[in-house]
Image (tube, rainbow, N blue to C red; front, side):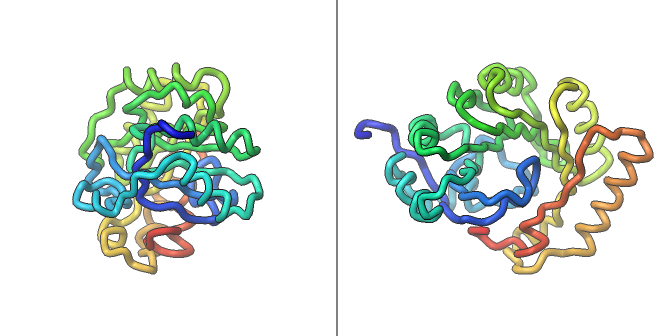
Length: 242
C-alpha cells in the first residue's frame, strides 16, 4: 500500500531453520532489519547494527519485502522471523498485517528497549535483555512496556545470552522478575570467531561454555530454563544469510 513507511533491511533469506530459542529447528524465513539502539561488545550481527554498514541497508516498502518472503517460501505459509539489529525500531506493522492475512506467522526478538503496538500481532515475542558482558544496561521499565504492548496474544519468552557468572546471575534475577514467562539460556559464542565470519564455529569453546551452563543451573536447582546452543552456528558457523 502506497504511503507506508519504508523498512531498512539488511538481508532477507531462507527458508532455513531457526537456530536458537523457543522456535529452534523450525523452518523460517528471516527479515533482518538494519539499525540498533544498542552496541553490545560481543554482537554477532554487526553488519545489521554498525552505521558503517548503512550503505548496505535497503529502504524497502512492506510490499517489496512481502514479495521476497513469498518468493523464498514458495507461497507456503511459514514463520517469518523479524530480527536485526533491533527490529523494534523499524515500522513492521504493515508487513505483519500483510503476512498474517496470507496465513504466515511472525516472530520477533528484541532486547526490550522499544515497545511497539504491533507486538500484539506477533505469534512469538522473544525478549532478550542484554547481560553485563554486553556492556549495556537494561531499562526494566522499557521491557515492562514491551510486555504491556504485547498483551495476552503472542507467546512471550525470555532469552539470555550467558558468557560468565555475572551474566548467569543477571539471567536468574531477571527471570525472577517475570516468573510466568518461559526462560531460555544460550551460551555466548567466542567473539573472535563471530567477528571473523568464520565458516566453522569454535566448537570446543562453545561446548565448554554449554557444559558449564548446564552444570551451573543443575547445581543451583534452577530447573526452569531450557539451555540451548546456537544450532545454526554449530552447523554453518558465522556466515551471513544463514
